[in-house]
Amino acid sequence: MRGRIRLLCRLGLMLAMAAVAGCATVIPPELAHPVSEQTLEYYPGLVKGFEHTYPLRTLLVLAVDAPCQSQSGAAASDAPPGDFQVGETVDLKGELLQRLYMAPIQGNVQRALIAAATEAGLRAHAAPTASYSGSSNDDYVLRAKVLQCSIKKQRVALGGAEPSWQTVANFALDVSIFKPPFHVAFWQGTTIQTYTDPPDAGPAGADEDEVSIYDQPGQVLSVAFTRAVEGIFARPDLHSLITEDRLVHQ
Image 1 (spheres, rainbow, N blue to C red):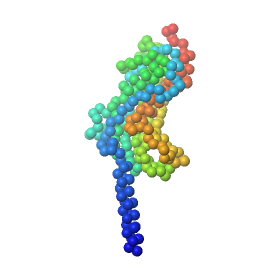
Image 2: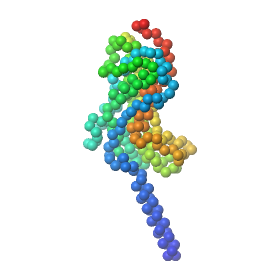
Image 3: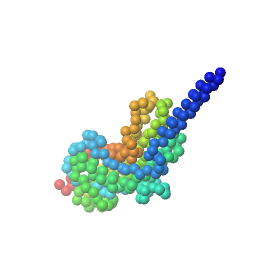
Image 4: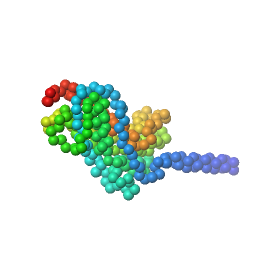
């Protein structure tokens, strides 16, 4: 009887130690600080099929409007100066672990639009202002507004598997392309992208081999961002419109 009691006690101690060890590995070291600064990057060549398919036309890319930056609320006391909150990291219960911040993104978005347009075959360059007057000497003028820019890193348990970290990023742009001197948009569209790392396993449950590709939440957002930007020029309707367009000044 005493032997059985000792055995049960040992098993109980071992389970308790395993539970403590398991809890200790749930929170990665990078979450030790309540605030983390992320970076938005453009990954050229992520979207395939539109490269060098447009006629050689000039495109003026206006300064980008990013109202999402002004709607992020009051910054934490230890947030990087001038940054805006782009997302958060939460635990399995949805409780906040870390706030994610990012420097103003207008310049990043404008440069990415120019890079994507250049990949497409256009000659693109930047304008210092966000307003369109209709007096540009360029063939087309692009005006963009950021509709969504957000990240959420969360602890999830999918398909009965052990909890793991998953990051969901959303990026959306509203784009208008004008043909000077006209003030009515030559083309207008919205590009929306969501990227999940690692992706949801679906009804079949989580795949044990499915692990995160990116270390930082900002990298996951950068994928959604790049797909949204390059997706503009991958649109068949825009491609056909510009390819078949007869320029006014020709």
